[in-house]
Image (cartoon, one colour):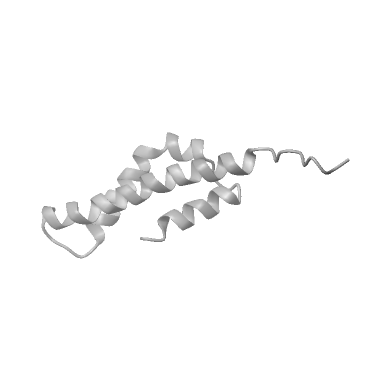
Length: 84
């Protein structure tokens, strides 16, 4: 699960998914993260919460990192002063 940011960045970089789609479907992403946290080993709600909080932080952080990567890829390169 700690590879979630790398996976999402790869999908954004390959234009499989956009950051607008990730932002629009944020509630669905949180639901999927919650389901994954419930499926991880741990039977009590406290353990499940302790597993879910870092997963949600990773998901949210990967969205913002994907936004930065997408903006950087879309930014035009400045013209070089030495080129004619």
